[in-house]
Image (cartoon, rainbow, N blue to C red; front, side, top):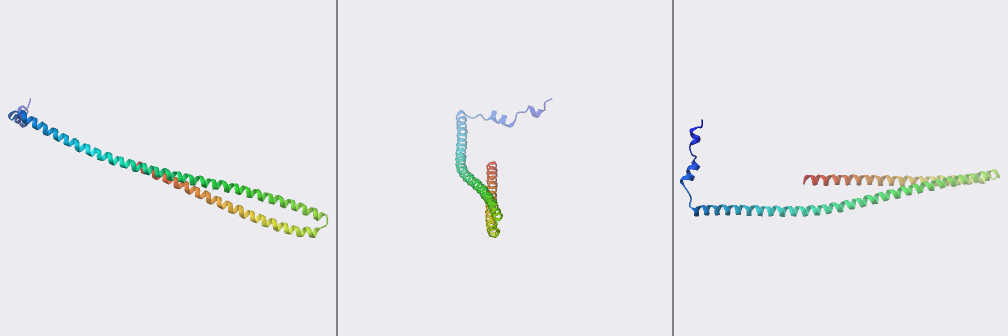
Length: 184
């Protein structure tokens, strides 16, 4: 059963029925509502334009930063390629030095055979002196080439270490860029 309160007219319904605005008042009221709506739309439009300008400026800034990052990446890739070339050159130089050492060893063996022939022919003293000279020369050459090989190996290890550092820096840079883009 409906409540008595539900059947009574509301205040707004009573005020609507009791005061009926004139057509001019209605038109004036509608005009004011339209002007208010137009003002709100103008505010929204100017806010949208401001936001659009901010977005455009940020987009241009990101484009500049992206270009800078690409340039930096290109520079790092170039440096990495140069480091790899240095490593290849060092590896070739080490191989060449090993070849030279092998040739020196072969030459030492050849000289030793010649000394044996000289000993067989009775020139033991002369051969002994030559042997001493050759052995000293072999030790000298062997020591020299070993030191060259060791130095070249150290340089190659340093170059490899540099390359590893560059790779790690590039990885960190890529991570930072990724984090920066994710944060945006």
